[in-house]
Image (cartoon, rainbow, N blue to C red; front, side):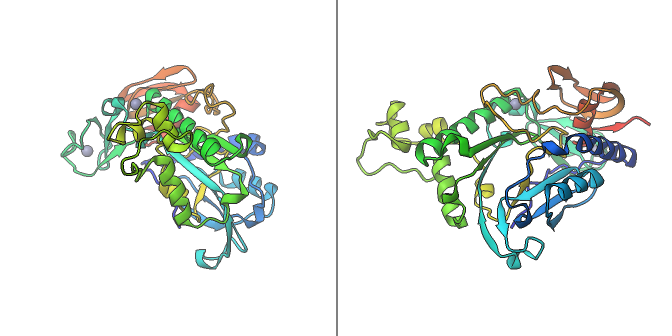
Length: 359
Ligand SMILES: [Zn+2]
Ligand SMILES: [Zn+2]
């Protein structure tokens, strides 16, 4: 069992900023709780959420979409999760829940893709004084207070997001071509921050143990791909087909083929049958962007389409931020300054611990 990937930067927010975030999320859920995608068999799912400024609460269950909606408005959590597994009693401790099965899920995070732009937006935050430093490698100490508790600020630019989209497209290719999953059984979502989530609604996968899911994940990543002794890849399907089509059939190394065709999924997500996964139609607590359903992957604009919060301008104090683009407008870079920005941009920085409500 594991909780969703936690951000390594625990945002340091003051009470006023936390209150602003909670109010903004509450207003969103008050108006849009009907857009939250409620899973099938809701009473068999485990739910969890992270309140602003606090730790995860899980092993919750709801009997109806109305109960869930009421709690979202009441709690206004920073992030909301639901199990891909179904259980006899989802509120019991994990080994007593009575696991019945789990949908196959995939996570692609831009942060796992070695884009060349990465060094340009590699930032580090000092946990002691909040100073933000740009450096490809971990700095030895904070340039302001000399402290050594530095955490990397995960950041993804348009190039990184496009690379994640490309990986998602490859994953869809594996699922449809190699595993015979019909296109309409694959739900594609923008994760709400830096990547894509895919949910597969295909009964064949639901009873699979973690070891079988690991084999699927490894196949898709191209992990452990070996060339049969003396063989050339000339077959029509699967990896062999991909390698032959690309003219790599006689190359002695397989790394180029893995780089060209493999999809960089996070296998720890796919193999975890007890995971609680961010709910589609909810806001991401480290961005304020929506985990949004993607109907057309090529046409989807990750810096535009999931921006759902309002554009009322508010004044913020920004400790520091790399430049970022949302809804067609570029903000920053900022370095220890005040700024007046739309609510969605203010929330984006506040949820990353980079800005505060101006007092
Ligand atoms: Zn410092
Ligand atoms: Zn980038």
